[in-house]
Length: 77
Image (cartoon, rainbow, N blue to C red; front, top):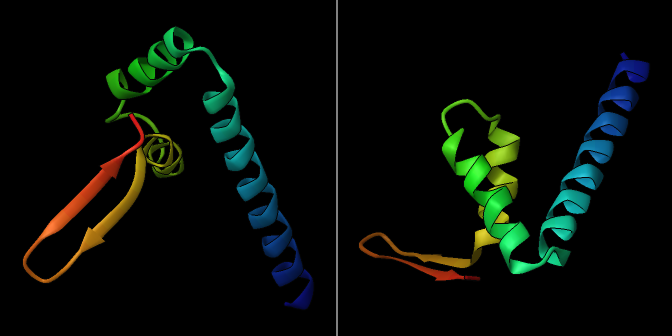
């Protein structure tokens, strides 16, 4: 069980690293390239994984403020 837990942790760390690299890659692209990449993701929104959706949201959203009655989103774009 310990070995399995270590492997899960290792894979989770790897996944986070890849997500950070993808987000950095999107940030470093020129604006037209970013738009094309994001448009591609948004056109396939229903088919992409939850992790890909998180990466896209991370590239678009600066911060979300939520209360019981109101939600404010500060966008990066």
